[in-house]
Each structure stands twice: as structure tokens, then as C-alpha cells.
Image (cartoon, rainbow over all chains, first blue to last red):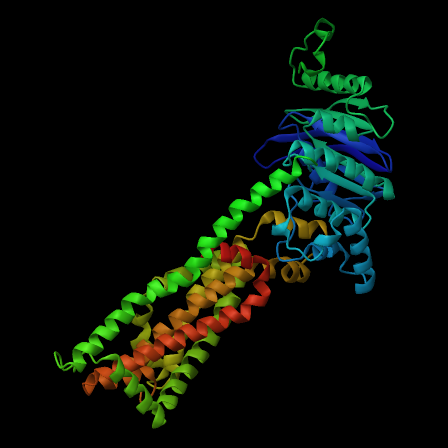
Length: 261
Length: 281
């Protein structure tokens, strides 16, 4: 279990990015964190990753306090951040340097197979498309088998089709070892497709505003009525978090209402 | 799937038509570049051969070539080239070692940078030839002062190159290293070193170029052998063919040593050579 206890972050310039954020996340759960810009989503994720220290509060994974990057916690960034001087295979094996070479090669080969890039093993990162590069980044983060995988808007730089493919692909990979996923996103669709629970954050200072359970089985049909309903409840909550007036949804019922927003 | 085929065709067609002219220009461009010097050389050769000019001050290419072969036959050439190469090698080695060490320290530790960099930058502002009298007083007229001068010339571009390269390593890539819990030596070996290498090779090549420049200065000041001595000797004895011969050999050696660095670094920079090719095309 990952316990976040009253995490606050105030930057040296006095900006309060995050105020007393608490949550308990079960092993294997998929959490989406969503919110307007400046609500501290990325700050929170970096604190969990141990990349930036929180000003106060604690991150605890299985009763172990996290203050610096940890072997059980992996992270995927918005950009693939592959090392341009390593082949695709070596990039994926980057976190396995401590393993004997044969074992490492076997794991990398399996991961390459799993993300569908076996034929690109010896390619350089610059030869990959954006979607392929992000798949390599996912493989690199998953191959050491972390208990928690953090994703900071991982698909936001991709086109809509690639993004959908990768969302499905991520779920597929997740099913292998069922790590906890914590996904920061600004895409309501993505949050509802992936998450068991959506945490809505509110800006200035960043804090938890709302929790929405997505009680939908998997695989989820993006076009189903129920999916729309969940999406709308996340959107409503998001609007409220930004103090926007929420129009009366019932008034817009009718043909074509699905896309009104 | 249906829409795949036409899209593929479309993208391959312009690529092919773009490749055709570039294949043509690969041969055409060097030829075009050689046109002017070759015409001038042949023209001058013709002018001297036909007796319109005696070519005493501007010897024709054939006479320069004869001078080089004569120097080679007498063993003089090897002696002078060896002396110059030895000085450049030693000066380059010292300059590179010092530049790399100090540049790495300044790039890595900001405290060291604040302490060291202002002084180095101030020294850099001094035209390096201004050191010559001092070096001669301190180190004597012989080899040491020459090598020191060359090392000074090599030092600054290497120092700046290494420091700048370390400072401009992508913070995001360093963060990847941090998430995999690399620290200290592992971070340097697996992230910083490969990231810095391309810029380092460039700074070595710039440094080597300056090394060749400074060896001429050092040998003009006072030497009994070396290509710079050949230059001076040719001037004092009124032998322009010997001066031009030395210049040609300088050009060949400079190009050759630069190419050696390029070739030695190529296996480590394979990951970016397509980028280099795209820039060169």
C-alpha cells in the first residue's frame, strides 16, 4: 500500500504548490490524478517518485518512507527521455545494470516482444516514432518490475489514435504484474478509460478536491452510455474545482448531447 | 488498412526524387570546388613555363613539388616533420589533459566554477602569443617553452568545450539517471560522459587546430628544426618554394591529424551520425 500523508510543497519563491494532500492507494490500483493547470499534480508525482522533496508530509510504501528514488517506484515522463546513445534494447535494459548479462538480455527480449518492438531492438532512439519511443520508455520503466509506476501525462504529446493504442497497451502490460499505477493527466477520457479511481485536484494551493470511483469493468467501451456518465461526472467535478458555473446538464439532453462539452 | 498503401507510395516517391539530385551533387560539388585552385595552378605553371614570368617570388606548383621531393630525399623532411609533430603531440597532450580536468571540475562543481572560471576567462582574454617572452624567460629557448605555448593554445578551447558541454547536459536525462538511482561515478559514466562526448570531440578538433597554429609561432621564434624553421629559413635565404612547401605540408598534416580524431571518435558517435550526415548534405 502507498500512503500519502499530508504532503505539502512550498517553493522557495513562496508559491504554495501543494497543501496537505493525503490519499491511501492499494497495491495494484489504478489512480488518475486530474486537475487544472497549476494544481500541483506534477509536484505531487515528483514527491512520490522521490525526485523532489516535499516541504512536509510523508510518502510511505509498504511501511517504508520514500525520500529519494526507490527501486520499487518507476516513473514515465511526458517525453520518452530515452538515452540517444543507447540502442532501444540497451535503453530498456538501463535499469537492470546489476543483473548478469544473460538474465538482462532475456528480460529485455521479453519486454521488447511485449511492447511489439522486437524488430527495433538494435535501432537508435532517433529512428523511432513518438509512439514507439514512448512504448520503449514504458518498457524501460516496467522491466525492473516496480510495485508502483508513476506516469506524468505520458501520452499528451501523442496524436489521438496513438494515444488510444497506448492506453490500451498500458492496461495490457499492467495486467502482467499489476503494479499500482498513478497517472497524472489532463485528459478526462484517459482518466475514465484507465482508472479505478479519479482524484480531482484544485489549484492555488494544490489540494485534493474530489474522489470519483469508476465502477466499470475492463475492457471499457469508450462509446458506452455508462462511460459517458462517468466522464460527465468527472467533468462536472473538474468544473466545480475551478469554480466554474456548471450548466444544467439535464437541459442539454437530446440528440448530439454527448459532445456538447 | 486500405488507406495505408497510397500513403506509403506517396511518401516514398518524393524521397526518391530528392535522393537523385543529391547523388549527382555528391560528385559534382568537390569537382566544382577544385575547379578554381586547379585552374589557377595550371595557369601559373603555364605562365612560368612559357617564360612570361620567371616565377622567382611565386614559384609554380612543379617547383614546390620538386622542393618537397628533394627535402624528402635528403632526409631533411622527416627530421623537420618529426620535430614539429613531436612538439604538437606533447603540447596537445598537456593542453588536453589540463583542459579536460579543469573543464570537468568547473562543469561539475559550481563552487569550483565560481572559484576557477573567472580567472581562466581572464587569462583567456590575453592573446596567447603575449606569453612568449615570459615563457622564454622562464622555460628557456628550447623545447619546453615551445611545448608550453602550444599547450596554452590547446587548453582554452578544450576547457571551454568540456565545461560548456557538462553545463548543457539535458537536466531531463540526468533525472532519468536519478530515477534509476545512479549516483556519483555511475552517473558520470553512464549519463554525463556519453552526453558530453560529441561536444568534447569538437573541442579536441578546435584545440588541435590551435595547436598547429601555435607550433608555427613557437618555431618562428627560434628553432633549429621543424616546419616553422623551414618557413623562417626560406624567408631568410629567399627560397619561396621552401616556404610554400612547408605550408603545403602543414596543411596536409593538419588535415590528417584532424581526420584521425574524427575517425577515432566515430565508433562512439555512431548514434548521431545520421544527424551529422543530414547537416552535411
